[in-house]
Amino acid sequence: MLVTGREILEAADRGGYGVGAFNIHTLEMLGPVLEVAEELKSPILLQFTYGSIQFIGAEAIGVLGGHLARRSPVPVAIHLDHGAGFEQSVTAIRSGFTSVMIDASRLPLEENIAATRRVVELAHTAGVSVEAEIGRVGGTEDHVTVNEWEASLTLPEEAERFAAETGVDYLAVAFGTAHGFYKGEPRLDLDRLAEVDRRVSVPLVMHGGSGVPHTLVRQAIERGVRKVNVATELKDAWARAVREILAVQPEEIDPRKLLAPAREAVKHVVRQKIQVVGSAGRG
Ligand SMILES: [Zn+2]
Image 1 (cartoon, helix red, strand yellow):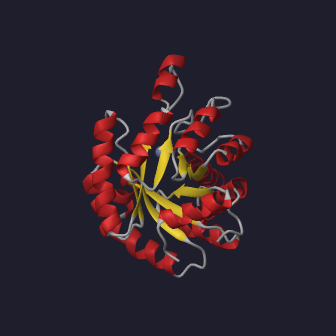
Image 2 (spheres, protein in one colour; image 1 turned 120 degrees about the vertical axis):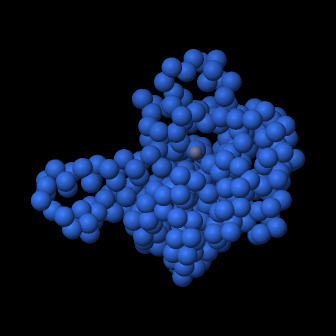
């Protein structure tokens, strides 16, 4: 069934588990990701950056994704990841997305609040739920000093004010995770995450979930994280599988044969993540 992100994440909050939000970069990834959610009876968020929306087509996502979600036995939300402004939210909502992220975290707090509130008003009118971010989830930890690292993290008192003034449905917290792969073990500030969770009643979101050790993901879920984003690991698995079959079978030209291993590789990652976040059997 096609539901809002809020429905999925509030159920996760009541049950104390996390739910995977998987980035779909090409339409070919949609089927395998959904198949695994159904196989494991797990709720799921299918998420698309605006770049992926432009690549695949907003209408194609809305029509095909919406149809597959509606006839699926598990709760599915279709989510805009890192929406950059009001217009992108409008595009997603008009295309049938049931969840949008407005990422104005680069802006000063007051402006982030104003931009987020504007999207919340629009989305709630349309029955769509909203994620926003406070603090900055970094792109990579390379060349970042400890002071810069700390300065980018979410301040619990700001998170409390932000949630209250925006009416956002779930909140992305910067507590040390980063987009892309990590060099070594990521440094996570789990005490900060717990403090944000104490002050904020809405479910929390972890960006940069790729490559975070399973024990740390579970510790973050114990401290209020309900939405766990996974993008890089899916891309990596997809690319490795494609590279491998092209190397082994250089004469093969059938796209179905060339993409079959990539589909399986994606399914493997999703299966593992759903087990780690604890959403299997919750759909
Ligand atoms: Zn992100």
